[in-house]
Image 1 (cartoon, one colour):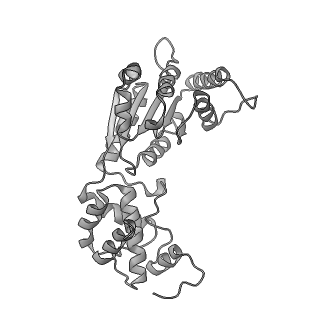
Image 2 (cartoon, rainbow, N blue to C red; image 1 turned 90 degrees about the horizontal axis):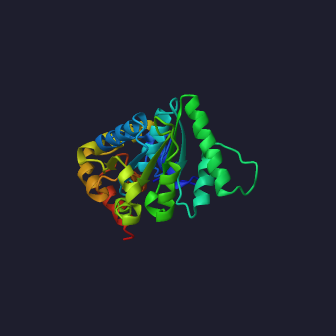
Image 3 (cartoon, rainbow, N blue to C red; image 1 turned 60 degrees about the vertical axis):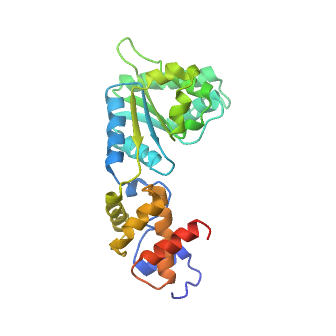
Length: 279
């Protein structure tokens, strides 16, 4: 390994491997979207829910499977047909939820602290105006398993806006598997019955991992720098979860860089895994 001077370790390994970007950063980035069979299915379900005006849809998956990134891809793909809001963080109160929706839809309020009614009226007015212009409004709630039951119930009430012929608002809930358990509560039965479109975002299959790695390396401006024999180890260490694949691969890149090796090998994966475990 050559001296890195004042370079960050990330910049140093990027230079070493001829990369323009970090190929395995864990931040969701639409440029690095990989459409596995499961991600494609989730997108199809989301599009169906909105196109058919189903009112509610739900996408569940373990942490790191790509729910947020898939939602961003969906929003971009449907941009000509919808106005959308993506609420990323758990909401504490109904007013905070409404205010977050107003902000993400790009709306302005005349008052600094509008009431719940004023916020709801603003959202309703926007939804009606959008419908008149041929666009549906879609609200996507991330980490929905963290919402309190009363907030989940308030979403059902918000969704009731409709004309005599159709509903004007679609709400897509993104959450970990615990969301399904929460919705099974008796107090949330009306909301649960309204969610007619449901899909699970699964981890990558082992046979999809090599294509996933190659795509990210290519998008980062590099060429294949790993031995294909590492694939079973990558799958074993990550269980196919994209965020964990990225975490172990970035540590492995650093290990290969320190080893002055232009080829990422099994020993680098093993060092990376031990590092992630704190060993």
